[in-house]
Length: 273
Ligand SMILES: [Zn+2]
Ligand SMILES: [Zn+2]
Image (cartoon, rainbow, N blue to C red; front, side, top):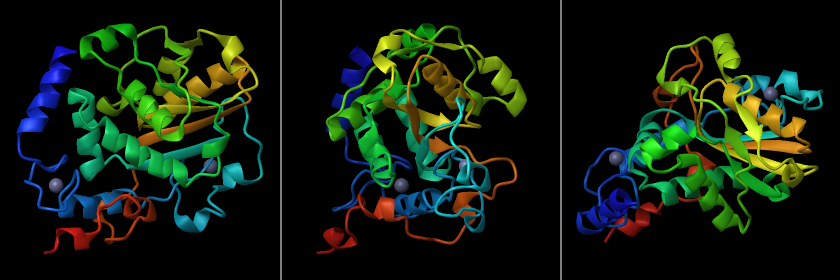
């Protein structure tokens, strides 16, 4: 708590810098410098299936769904809807890493996460928000739970509630930090969660909140645990997803405009005198 207060004080007395690259911000900039807003547009322009989150070329997505999800009802391990802010690259990766170390950008990341949720068809169907839990030892070591802060931020913005009903029963590695095959990931995570209050989730539509999704194994296991406990639908909202092995780097693509980012980016006119 003390270190959190110290971070706030230090942020209040130092000149505003870009949350991703530490450049001094110009008048009219908000959170990020112009170059980082540009890269954020690139990172957030990725195409993914709105049900399972897989990245497929836009030509393989029809109405936002991949071929696997198009004609199939979600099963017990499947999400009922998926949203993410963008690729775990460039400014989004940097801010997420800093947030997990210093917990100072929760409001900004909450704003980004909320903007990505606004673009979904499910955001108004959610009964409550459930953060993907960390193991208690990791929570104590870090002093806070990043997904809990994000869930709080979303619940505040959407006038909803957070129900932290998932518990992580054993420590598992942070998959985006280590090299591990997808099948090994699924094995490691199996049975890692339990639901503390099944009566709360019974017949409810809930949304899991995560920070970084690598293969989705953690989110699928959490979904399975919640559906087995009686949840009717499980949606997913994550900040970032790591690109798969043969996926091109989103930052190497053409500079595009993400409508979602444009909705929260400060107008370029503000900085002009
Ligand atoms: Zn920057
Ligand atoms: Zn799909």
